[in-house]
Structures are given as C-alpha cells and as structure tokens.
Image 1 (cartoon, rainbow, N blue to C red):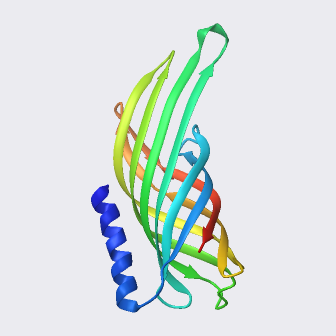
Image 2: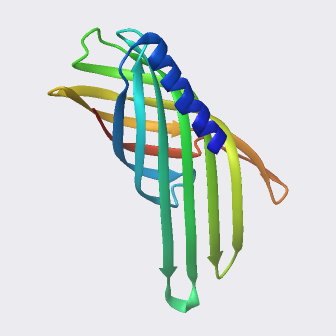
Image 3: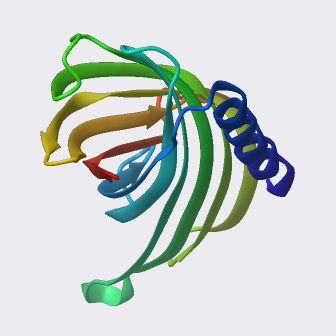
Length: 184
C-alpha cells in the first residue's frame, strides 16, 4: 500500500513539474457502504487534480472508511463488526463542458484497496483481510465557489471475485460512496 501511495504521489508531482501546471488539492466528505451495504457511514477523501487539458485531468485520491456495528436483540441475538477500507486511486477524468465553472464529469481508472472485516455474532464469526487491485469510477457535477470548486459525486470500486467457503462470489461494487469534494 505504501509503494502504491508513493508511486501515485510521485506520478502527480512529476507530471506537475514537467507540465508546469498547478495541482489542485481537495478534501471530501462522503457516505460510504461496503458491497452488501451492511456497514454504512461517513468516509473521508483527500487528493489532487492535475489538469492535462481544459476538459481532461488526472486525479488521484486516498479514501478512508471505517465503521463499527454493535447490535443486540431480544433472545440473546447479537452482531458485532468492524469494517475498514483504505483506497488509493488514480483516474483520468473527462469534464463535459468547456466552461471550467460548471460541468458534469466522468472519471475512470484503477485503485488499490485494503479491506478488513472482523465480525462476531451468535451465529457466525470471521476475520477477513484482503488487498484488491480494482477498477474505479467517479461521476458527478462540479460548480465554482469563487476561486474554488465544489463537487457532488458518486465513487465506486469493483467488481471483485473471490471464493468463500467453497462458493464463488462476485461483488459488483466493493465500495460505493456518495458525497462532496471541496477543490482548492
């Protein structure tokens, strides 16, 4: 994961130096969920945009999502879970409008995702960890707030296929998040 992060930071910095284009860092707040939407909660995103052309840019981000579940029901039934993902992504993003003040956008690329799920209940228990290399997509709309921009967007990673207790499973989306970014 550290190598992937170092590579992405190095790629953006190198492109910035070579093209003499200013980076546009951003922070984001999202509502995220795992593949089953069992764990749903706030998540955070930080990254940078690098404009290659007026309507085309390279964007890279780190997305952090952590959620705990503690449920107790009548009859002694309980569910306790801890879920965490750290996603590092690089996308090529296309803006639909020539105006840089308002535009729909679509970004596609790849990501590295560290995924941890620890679950204990009265009927089952597991401790699963994995590192995924996945496609990533971002779609949304941005508009200007003075010199800065604000986005409303949907981010998704996946699909991912794995074998679980002899069954072949496919997660169409390993993580889905809806939120906003503030671009400096």
